Figure 1: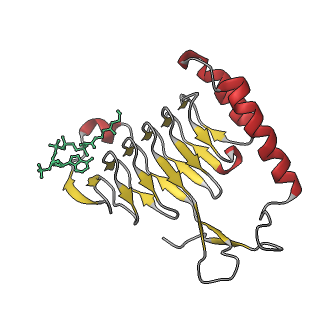
Figure 2 (figure 1 turned 90 degrees about the vertical axis):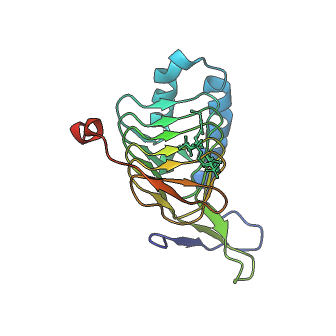
Length: 193
Ligand SMILES: CC(C)(COP(=O)(O)OP(=O)(O)OC[C@H]1O[C@@H](n2cnc3c(N)ncnc32)[C@H](O)[C@@H]1OP(=O)(O)O)[C@@H](O)C(=O)NCCC(=O)NCCS
């Protein structure tokens, strides 16, 4: 869970941990996404993907990003082929987010890569990457904490709060999310491996 955890030092209390270049990119992104994409209907997915790529997001083939998805820093997000980000899903990508092939991040799910170190004065920002495995499903309004890895073909139930890594091919529900059952891998999934 702690791999690639980064502590972002700040010059002074309240100061931004990002350099001027990144802050300018953030500002531009925050203006352009709602203006050029936020209103677009579903079939304009290609246009949204185009803009996201221009802002450094790595997006494979046949990915879908809903117009009302919120992506904090597209340059920190990687989507493998067929991954899908739903309506009002929130990719809070202060740290890196990896979405595996054909995974689904459902409506209003929140992938949160940032927190604060409460042990240090000034509570510096700490980021850790989130990985969603291939063909995993993150249910509506689920909340995924920094550093969590969701295994392949795993289902995170609606409104679950995922605080720890989740193994492949299982179902977790609740707050904190706990194992519900183990799934059997279907032959269809094997065929697509
Ligand atoms: C997790 C989920 C896949 C489980 O589905 P299921 O296997 O059909 O589960 P069931 O409906 O048979 O419920 C089984 C038990 O799990 C509980 N449960 C199911 N989903 C739950 C959830 N999200 N959170 C907490 N408990 C849940 C049920 O209350 C039931 O408990 P009980 O046995 O004590 O009565 C499903 O409930 C879910 O959350 N789906 C996500 C829906 C969603 O996000 N849709 C987005 C649009 S596509």
